[in-house]
Image (cartoon, rainbow, N blue to C red; front, side, top):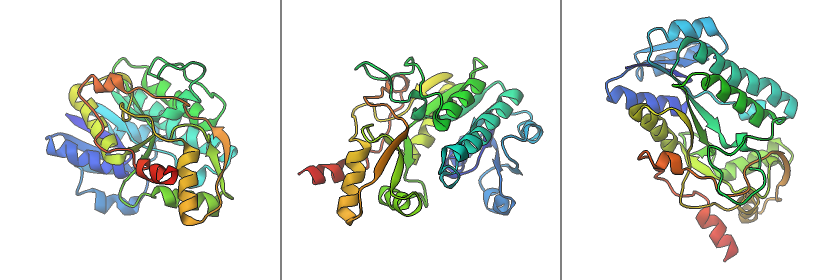
Length: 287
């Protein structure tokens, strides 16, 4: 197959390696011309474009069997709700709109934030659970981006929790320190929501699995066997361990308050390999 990866970041680069090893022809994009030389060793062709440049996306994806949209917002551009309104719409919705206009088979890496706090009830949240929190930019624009992809019956949306473990990525203590240093000790998400996290290798494997298995529709992707500790429990433990002031949680980006089921994708033969990265820290704090 010929595949176009819209966004050769950490996930896109690792995915490209797998797809090339499978014998596929791979085209990838970057927004930074200076990165082209580095990326040319990973794919058959590199193009410089932004996802909202539909004509350029169409030219780059000509003849492709699928487009994989791996673009994600830059946290440094999302400090306020106003910044998130502009940045999320541009990066997510416009990229998916461009992809959906030029290819019927689009795979989009989405977010658990579309569920808001999960609503009322005690049952595990699955792909049929209604989306919510329609006013917060993160949730709203991930939902709108998903809608672009799902206009085609061949579209596929993978909903992920927070990703960690990519080369050069911030560790969880580094993320807390950044919240203290750059955001005044404030976190924009919910204190009580379980801190679901997924290693970037599991993200890459999930996308690779979807391509191999030719899956379409919506899939939650996380460890289906456990519910992690809350944001507050994890970040309090990190702050206490480092003698930092504890964070204030603003509850602007809501996250599900109960178990999220990944049974649907597990039933297709996929499962995550990396355990909860914060479980031992929280257990030590509670001991």
